[in-house]
Length: 186
Image (cartoon, rainbow, N blue to C red; front, side, top):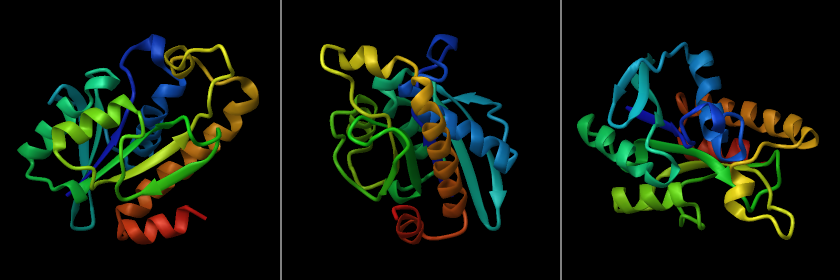
């Protein structure tokens, strides 16, 4: 079993904001894998399909970003998943818009959604795809920045990174994450 989680905030007012790029990747994966997020349990919306012998789950936590772990960990426990079965897709201030970076482990790096997951899961040893959103200009508070929309000059690069991230998710349905990481981090 594999679980792909896109981090974001529920609701219309957060759509296409910097903080919701994880949700956008899940939307692309839904189309590519033909999965409906028609299950409403574990404080989230999820669905699943089979790819070969593996069952692939897609999840959008509906807890708001800072409590993401409260959705992910109960689902993992119910389906008896291990941390290596988890792939989290989320925004990263430390990468420029349009860049993605895959990792197998690491700290939360100040990201409250990741902090929640690490705290609830009890480990930072799980796969992740970080999507660059860049840093705010001086004088703009980080919460305002991450909850804002991309300017048009960044949106095309970000859309390309969302495609690349969803392709990495698809590759993970067939290959070991280390191989996917080596292929997509170039």
